Image 1 (cartoon, rainbow, N blue to C red):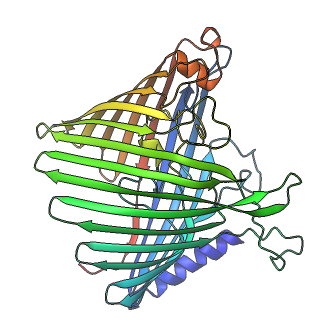
Image 2 (cartoon, rainbow, N blue to C red):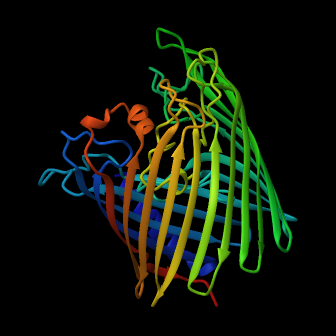
Length: 427
């Protein structure tokens, strides 16, 4: 019945759109992937993975002078995962991706409440993770201010799962959902000032993680602080972006964090109307081999990690936490091939920020290729990535070189269609 109620809600909003602006659109995004070393070294004895997944979304937005309301529902399907004539969705992936209201408070102030995408700057710490079919969202409340080229956001979240035996959280506030830095509480302040050629932002973020004792009972909260800045400059054909973030406090179950940092620099140059060049580096702190009483490893938390450190997702995509960190040097070239098509070529060299137990630091080199083409109302993207692993990568991923497949690669094809069903906005 949940699906039916959501569809009825969308139809009701459409029927009342004569009193305000209403848009109804969707997204259909199937993606085919061949995985022969995606995310980690594949052993020689293992067969490559091959599958097709689809994201389907329906989005509705209602706007008036007093408030805006947005609702996005989605399903993520893997082809063939449901047996024939099954009456329900076997993977239970149908969900409300976004459901929020933004209330205008006047004089530049507003408040945004509900399930929403939180994304800032280059998405290093907060991002929508749009590459993942399921995406990333937050259940949060924001107090927002914007005037001219200045903006300020204050965000608050208190997560709960109602897993109390009574069926409702009437006793205590233990939060039993954990993993992938899922937080019990979150507070942050984000401020950004933009000038003609330069912009700068600061982020101060605190996350509280539910702790558990040896018997699985709730045992207090660990608090992790992430503080930093993003700087951007653009003049003519040249651009530069820099990140500097620090982490301190505690991870879940009172793991002490100290001296953790992320430092990144990206340079861009538009060589011509058809060629854009990029050069960058990122250093993410890691643990020394003999570190036992605390962690010095930085983790980028809720960013769109897929766009950083290689598209094959060997680092910081549900992995590489509390490890040796990363030193990433990369160069890229994007070619405009005409007729709404382009080719991206990117080469990345990886090393550990700290040594592995063997003393090795070199991890390997990755090459990423992405061809994109826009058609009339839809887009097609084709990608291929190759990992040339060094000795340290085999050690890091726990697969000896003589037992690994001779080639580590990944290929994918993605179609994206974004139909607009209804738009009452007057031009």
